[in-house]
Image 1 (cartoon, rainbow, N blue to C red):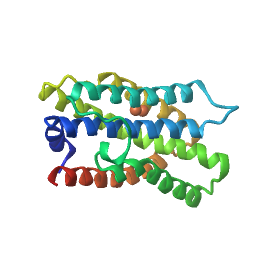
Image 2: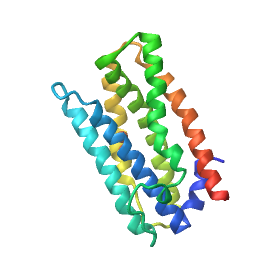
Image 3: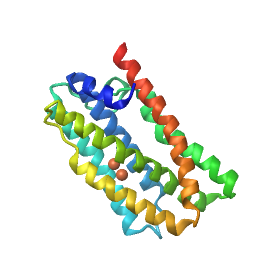
Length: 203
Ligand SMILES: [Fe+2]
Ligand SMILES: [Fe+2]
């Protein structure tokens, strides 16, 4: 089932909606921590600091939206408060492993260079996904008349994609080829994640 079909079922159930928001918050937090972990203490730039700060804000903002989704509390990121906990928790890590393997094998990168290139490609693929997912979610929220909204996240995610493309252009002339590979890995993980979400709704 497509995510657009699952979302109305999630939004109309307070418990599922709270867990969905908490799950997105976890994933934003994982992304934020990953960006911070890739920062070089000497050469970190304005753009990277801005990006990390905004992803941390998304995690916090989504957590805060849980109050507006009904009365189901999700105080932590423990399994009981998440949807598809295993897939959601390891999504970014699995993408990172696949991209690092590709970069090692295809470009022979290692060490600092490998870390930076992986940051660029993984983050690019995530931003492509975010630019698709949040507008679909916002539309579903509006159709359901929900008090939750993610418009401020949509605006910032659009900026992130542009910033990643600019950074990728200065990384490599054939950046699109590598970026497409990352998007291909991500698409596989995403469909597994959606299938796991669907399973939870059926049970
Ligand atoms: Fe984000
Ligand atoms: Fe982002």
